[in-house]
Length: 440
Image (cartoon, rainbow, N blue to C red; front, side, top):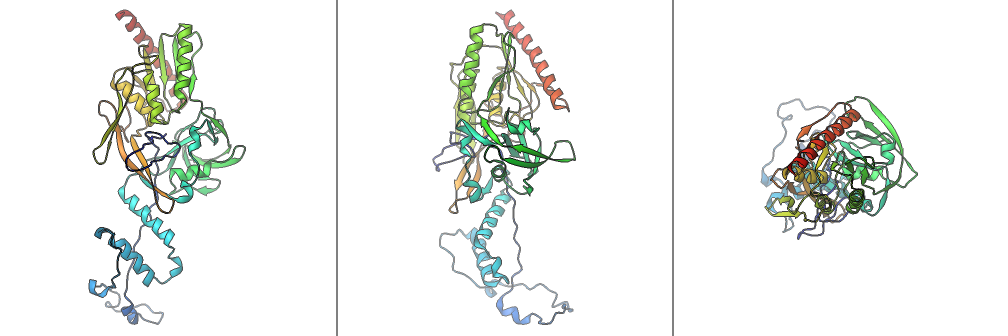
């Protein structure tokens, strides 16, 4: 569920693949806050040597110091004045802290970076440790990959949550559901970990076991799920309708580079049979993918126009457009979405809704509308930074809000909700086909 971008600022990579943009799931970091009470060496003689508590109000007073009484250090010339306190704090700790064994420069510098990023208050912007960034994640778009087959994100409360299991994956077979919160992996708490750190724990060679402690959405109970890792094929287009059904139900589970080829094959075969009158495009529990793949898929359903545009922090605007050579531009259609529809699937659904190409039926979507870039650091770690926000063609920003369906259909029971949504989609599509026939 990622958008990847290349900018003039440098080479940008994503969690899974190098592409033009990546909308990504969200990562977050734990902040370590620092506080210290400083005393100068000159005041050490005033400290009582006996193991007694001070009794006078004067000795209970926390000492204060004027700038002239504090040692000054020569600072590197390229440090901005507003960042002097970071260098000064490090120098004072080295000079004055009682237990020098705790002053590991790597640990403290990473903690300082985490605190800095945490202060920004954006769960999509975070620090990635070197050991996590060195892991291989780009194989997910190279035909297949090994793991459990589930997409995760960080929710508003900082918890790692399942967006959706990949169809036919070990995660789906084990009963993992959208909305499940991951608490532990193989007995190790994931509290405070970033999304990439959790993924690095969950992924592994096929035929190996991983035990995940989860909390199901809407339930106070915790449950441990044992999953045997497998090879996850990159199949993303599924036909859910019968061969002679005039309503072609196409489910797109992800947006991979090969998704458009799979989609075209379905559309061409359908055209040869000559029975299709309308299309149900099912984007439920689709966590996204690459923007280039999304544009290719959108080409099949939309005429030439803007698919989305993004705005960076410095006001730069970039946009992606569809062409006018799709196979299903004029076929009546409806689109199914739910709270598991995120990122690139929201790009497609938002454009379809803006251009009144088809109604959205189901639930409000996830709301992932950030464009992130990865900046490498000198310690081989990185900063994952929200670089821009994307908008639908009409200018709607969906980040943290999602897309509201034209026709809301839901239920507390997931399977019942899916059944009702599909029935309503079939009903609405028949109406659209009938109106289309009358106008012709």
